[in-house]
Length: 244
Image (tube, helix red, strand yellow):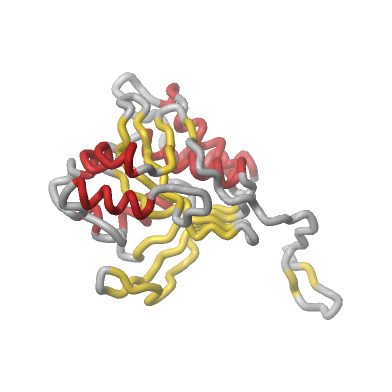
C-alpha cells in the first residue's frame, strides 16, 4: 500500500482525527481464570514473594534484572516498599496471585507509560520457579495486555530486554510480539553495557492475539495431566490467518 501524501507530495502517516490521550492504568486488581494481578503491596505480598523467589537454587534468575537477588526477606520488603503500587506509579508493579493457592508467586509491571501517544511497556518480569512455564505465567501476561488494549485503548504494547537474554527473547516471540531490532549500547546496568532488543504488539494485531490467548487458556486446551493440546504459537498463527 502506497503511503498518503500531503499537499507538498510528501509521504505521511494515517490521520487519527478522533485520537485522545489514554487514561493511566488504574491501581486495581485484574481477575483471571487461573490468577489475579494485584497492585504490589509490601504488607500483603512480601512474605509470599520472598518465599517464592527463594525456590531458586542460585541468583541466575536476576542476571538480566535491575534488582535482586534478595538475600533475606527484609531486603525484599525494602524493595517492595520502594516500588509498591500507588496512583501515578511508573513502573506500576503487580503481584501475580495463584488462585489455587492464594499466594503471590511472581510480579510484573506496566511501565514507560505514555498516555499522550498510547504507548505502554510490560517490564520488570520477575517470575519465580513456581510460576515459570505455567498457565498462570501466560495468563498474567494476557491480563496486562487486555487491560492496556481493551480497557484503556493503548495503541502500542512494548517488550524490551537485554539482547543477550535468550529466554526473554524467546518468551516475547511465543507471546506474539514482533521483533523490531537492537538499540546498541542503550543502557548501563549492573556495571555493564546493554544492547536492548525491542519487541511490540500494536492494536491492529491484538484481536487475533486475544482470540489465540483465550483459546490457549481454555480448560479444554489441557489434558488430564495439564499438558497443552495446542501450542500458543500455533493458535496465534491460526488466528492471524483467519483475520488476513
